Image 1 (cartoon, one colour):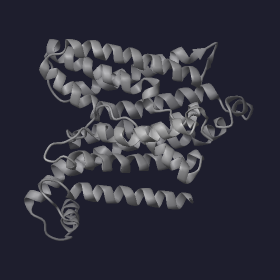
Image 2 (tube, helix red, strand yellow; image 1 turned 90 degrees about the vertical axis):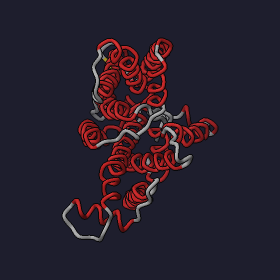
Image 3 (cartoon, helix red, strand yellow; image 1 turned 180 degrees about the vertical axis):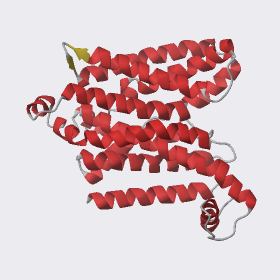
Image 4 (tube, helix red, strand yellow; image 1 turned 45 degrees about the horizontal axis):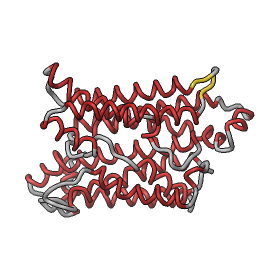
Length: 342
C-alpha cells in the first residue's frame, strides 16, 4: 500500500475513533454538538450545545481522548523502533525493562512512599514510575556494553532479566501492601486513562513529544541495521550509539506513558505488525505510521473499555491484551517470533 494511503487510513481511523469516543457515554453527544463545543472554545459559531455537554467534553472526554492518543502514539512508535534495533517482530517496550521498572517505581510509592513520607498529590506516582523506567533502562544499557560495544541481543536479554527482577520486587511490595494500596495497584497495573486531566495531558505531552520527534531521525540507520549489524558498520553506522539512542528514546516515551496511565501492553507489538504488513519495512514510513496507528488503537481500546460493560469500566490494558495475545500467538505459529524483521 502506498505510504500516502497508509497515513490517510490511519488518520481517518483516529479521527473516527476520537469522534465516537467523544460522543459515547452516560450522556450522549452528537457530532454536531461536539463540533459546536470545539468551535466555542476556538471562538467560532458552529452551532448550539448545552453548557452541561460542553463541560463534559472539555473537562472529561477531551483530555481522556488526548491522553489515550498520546500514550498510544508513544507505545506504537517505541515498539517499532525497538523491533527495528533488535530485528525481531515480537520485541516490545516491556522487553528492555521499561514497563517493569516503571511499575516497580509506582508500586514502591503506593506501598511505601505515600505511607511513610505522607506526601499527597497527583505527581509523586508518575514521577517515581518515570524514574523507575529510566533507571532500569540505564542498567540494561550498562549491562549490554561488553568490551566497548553495545549489543542489541545483550540489551534484550539484560532487559528481560531486569524485568523479572522488577517483577519480583513488585510482588514483594504487593505482599506488604494494605487493602487500599492493593486496589490502587491492581487498577494501575492493568492500565487506564480514566484519570486524565489537562495538566496530566500537558505533563505527558512534553516527554512523549520529544521522543516522537526524535524517532524519525533514526529511520535511515534502522533501515541499514536491518541488513545486519556488521553490514551496517561497513556503511558507517555507529551501531552501539544507535542502540543506546533508541533504547533511551523508547524509555522516555514508554516511561512517560506508563507513569501517566499504568502498564498497557501489546500496543507496541500489534501496531508495528499491522503497519509493516501494509506499508513495508522502511522506517521512514513505519515509525510515524506506528505512532499514528498506536494513537488510533488506544483511543478505540479505551472506548471499548468504558462502554463494553457500562456503567462499570474495564482497565484498558485488558482490552489491548485481548487484541495483542492472538497477534503474538500468530507470530509464534508462523515461526516469525525467531526471525529478524525485514
